[in-house]
Length: 311
Image (spheres, helix red, strand yellow):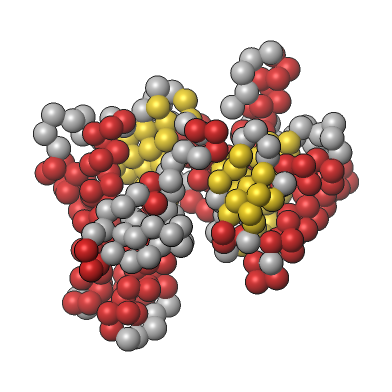
């Protein structure tokens, strides 16, 4: 399988065998500053070149899996993704035109693909009701309910755009709503909010976490605000969907128990009758989306060949 993940700051791509073994991996720039068409052209070029490499290495490409951020219209294959400058962009049609309409192509959400990989080979293995929640530049969720990954026709899982901050603390989110979880608890939000609070530019959430470890009171303040909003979000999700395990991923999971321990304690303290989920670190890291793209593509091929319902 050819697999490409457009989530994050760089395009992660590779060739993956049917058993999940990664035969080739690489990263490429995503030319976001050049606009949406340039991003799409870079994606098409990458898919074509990876297919050519597979053939040169003696492999037959059975399917192509591409995962992207944003909202995917499952019926039309169009994508709206603000950070890629895509609005109703016909990504699936363009992919098929570039590699041939007879080639099997899966277009999916990057976070749902990461959750699928964690379900199949990672921290969510063995669960039937669980959640994958990466905390990175933004926040979205992959929801596993009664053994199935929930797509909602391409719209499900946008937990980062649920309002958990009110009053003067609420900021305008890129989605147009005030007080979204993403504005206070994403990795990008930590760095931004620390800068606003102190007037100091920091090197992303990594530096905020370093300052937190050193006892910096401003880092502690923005961290506590982030934890409070995340606990609210996890309590709400637990009450509604009853996951047995929640796997936290993304850049912030590098904080380890500094992140996980207060989330466990905060959620447990708030629950009464609800089932208390395990809260663990995701294990597949930055490869989750790319691996999930390959797994989804392969499972779709095998389901089609057997006459079953695809992923």
